[in-house]
Image (cartoon, rainbow, N blue to C red):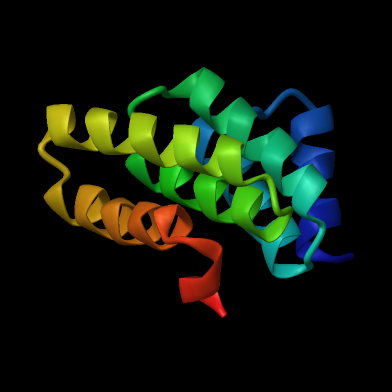
Length: 109
């Protein structure tokens, strides 16, 4: 049984939690199943809006899906939340990703 299947079984049994959803989202992301990853990062944030790592990886997942506007919105909101929590490293990383997305197209090539 894969890690994804294991996590899905746990959720189906009612063992839903922030960490379980985050782990499942990461597993889907690693497996390049980005739409599924988004679904579970959003569920992670339903459990805990202040989970900086989920904001960061959700933004990265939107970037992989070429949903630039959603990625920008996610990083912007994630930075604000991370700063409120004092999670300076996560805020710094999201600023770097945000800056890359906001570069003109010619600069990204």
